Image 1 (tube, rainbow, N blue to C red):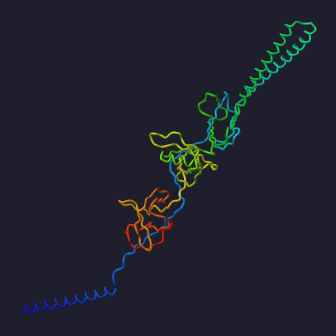
Image 2 (tube, one colour):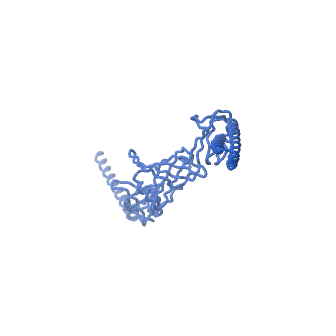
Length: 376
């Protein structure tokens, strides 16, 4: 009897539970019908404009700064250093006195040569007087023709002697000029390798000092051979620009192409180009490695931030937003420069493109623009 009562009680509880569950489900269904269908998901993205603007066609490379003129100063006479007239590493101008050498021996030789020349000139005057005197006497029959001829011969000999003595004197004066060494052009001088009192001679291998021209200077770099045709066309119709920047710094110098090597290196497929830079502020130092940018020409192209370009198995694409909906647009990227991609096909300019948030997007997704981060 007790067992039967327990079974009846359990059945009643089960019926009550089923009734309560049905009532709750009916209430939830009614509430869902009141709210309507769920809203489509909206993705928050950052947008940027596709712009049509002038874009340079350029080539980046590593270049070396070389001076246009560089001279190693050496002594042309055997003597000693008397004075050094510059500070190590100083800037010098053309004609500045740099070294003074001992010239006492040459001065003595010059005085000796001047004395020999004066004696020869005096002898020539005496010989010319004899010629005049014998010429007068020959007309009076007071002398012979032999005496007249001998006097003329002596005059001619002394004339030649004077020319030789004058040449010897001029040579000594040239040697004298070698005892003062001046700057052949403006530039910056190196450390003086000799000091006052050092003996120098023409056979010395080490120079007294070295002067490098600082303005203008050359920047030499290499470009791929595929660019050579475009560069030559640009040189014929315009002036390609060269920008040289010191790595790690923002300072740069701008110049133009001065020379293109007449041979392509068969081993590397590169051709050497030399640019000439004004370098008035001496930003570029001879021997420095610099980042060079050769701007061949400028084209009007569509550009977008490089972060907007996505890649798939079928190629590059960009999410273009119109009326709050993101659409997939296939594009062809021609080249990239300074964080921008040049679009050859797929965009016409002024489109809104997604630059952040692409991972949550698919074709047809609804989007909501948000403010771009500072510095983006």
